[in-house]
Length: 297
Image (cartoon, rainbow, N blue to C red; front, top):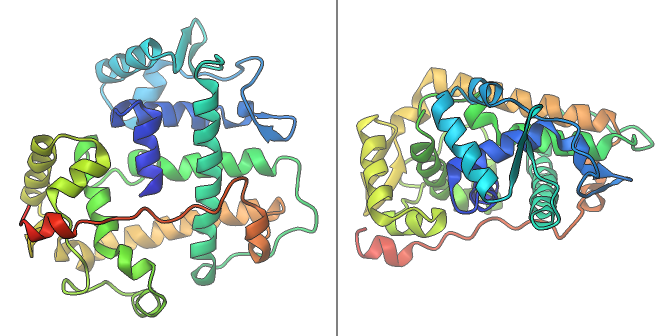
């Protein structure tokens, strides 16, 4: 959830702009590691063509061209004969650095959460000099999973944003409760355990208007991926009991384990993750939709 909301912030409040910026950063993450710390590069070495961005995100060329133009107007992207890249201009560099530090630390928190349940190898004795760049690359690649690897079943980016918020909100209390998290670590959570989230809360968290949020909730319900229950929206039970979905989740966890083990091989120690954070250990996003649900929104 925090990664998704950070993408919105990166895109100046526009999710689709943020997704394109995220892809650009993922392809040049190593450029933003300077003298062993995250910082703006003196020279931009890596870029992508608009066509390559569109192909990677499986999006129309015209849409990506429009998003790139918007990012350029915002000063976040630069366009040259070599392609499109995230700008290293001092006016935007601090925001980019803050996003990258956050992405790094959110990945470390993900490793902390997943390590007890995934086959993670022990770390090498001495961290490799490329560990920071590799961690950034893994963090950004994992954030891109909904757009590059797990596009189905929700293709539309705005619908996907709403869907991700609903999925996480439904089980936030489970992930923060030791007994519940253990009880449902390897099996679906029943409807009566999951907590619905209302349209107003989704709207407030994403910055989408109430009308846009409501339309996308209805669209998702028509796709049978969410349902209205107890005054809010829940992930549809069919999604939890679908064998294909279950296999997809297993494939994603295997991918996460692969990327984490690559970092462990470079010296990331799962036993001492508290020392791997650059900034404060990220908290879970707080979701307070009590008033929303009470009003039946």
